Amino acid sequence: MSLNRYLKRYASLAASALLLCGVMNYALAADTPPPAKKYKIFLSLSYSGNNWMSETANIIKSLAKTPPYDKMVDLEEVISGTDPQAQISAYESMIAAKADGIISFPISPTALNRVVRRGCSQGVKFFMFDSTVTEKCAYNISYITAGAGENMAQFLVNTLGGKGKIFMNRGVPGTSVDKRHYDGAMHIFSQYPNIKVVSEYYGYWDDRISQRETAKALAAHPDVDGIWSELGEAGVLNAVADRKGKMMPITGENMNGFRLGFINDDYRKRGLTGVSAGSPPATAGYAFKLMMEVLTGKRKLEPINVEYPLPWATADQIKLCKGSTIADGCNVFAGNLVPEGFSTEIYNPTLLPEVTLDSALKGTPTPGMTIQPLPAAIVKAPDEPGINCEHCQPPVDQYRLTKVTATVQP
Image (tube, rainbow, N blue to C red; front, side, top):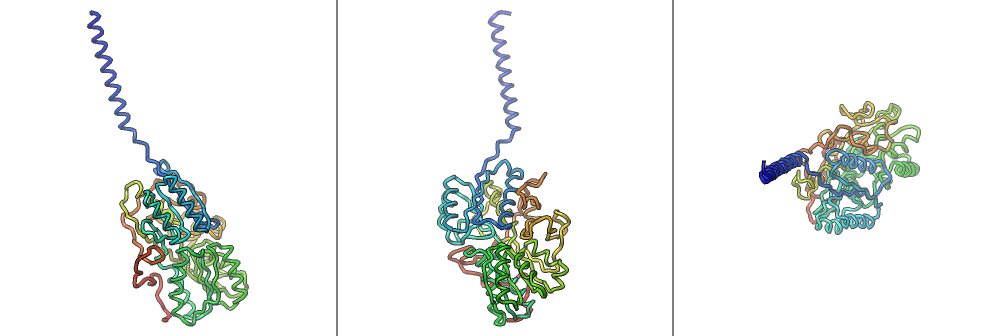
């Protein structure tokens, strides 16, 4: 073979090899999925210290660690406290850091509006959970328009036969949650002239503070007939139980110690009854999943007010879970598994099947679980001025009863 022919054949073989190598590399690249986009998400909490807020943060953290979000989310938690200006400053820092999304418990329905509006104009998605803002570019995901305040108030009125002295244990001043609950309750109580609110105090959604303030109220008004309470009701129950003798109807939220009181034989014999409703930590997880579906383009959803369903369990509907497993409609845990101030409404089989007790306690993902898509349909919350909108009209049935009927007529 001549040298020229040899060189030509070698060049042809080399070209074929390079082509084959290119095809193989292309095939390998086609089989390798592109790296997932990283989303910079900030979790902004306005206060900390109670179990409820820790649970909401842990649920969000557990979801951010669950595939495929574990490869897609950079999550940073910021706690700014109860001063609106501090949370405004926190939002400003997040916007400057080029946040894709901010999921937050806002301390005020109105004070944060300007900074939220500025963030929206720069492409930041704001998802508020439980508490709300009135700025229309934010997404509000909350149960508060579902009527916890008025339904619990009517339950108490029914139980007391329309007359008696009551206490009101409120939450954190200035929040939309406290305002909406209180307004709903007073809408009912004001219709019954024989219902007397003899003590009204702020328990700050904390069972220890609520216990202390309730004990003070009991010392001043030992003849109280019933108590309406926001979160912190486990402390309210402890203050009442510490007194010997007769107990009374108490309406509250879903703290574990409160629900255990309803299945305590001694307490039942002493006259404890009531209802457990309100503030599910699961709302935070639902808000996070909605936010991620919007950010990833899986859901087209303009800023909206979304209503989370109101938990509601009367004293005779409390059912103890077997160990840490949430199944068969159980709704309270043994006292050795969680603190008495633990909020039990952490799970929803349709909206939040990824969450377990460890998710809420430790922020850990559930082994083998992947993020499940949300149902296509959502429930739009009604517009309520000062709660989730600014220039809007409230519905004519704003404080309608959805869980009880008025067995005692005003």
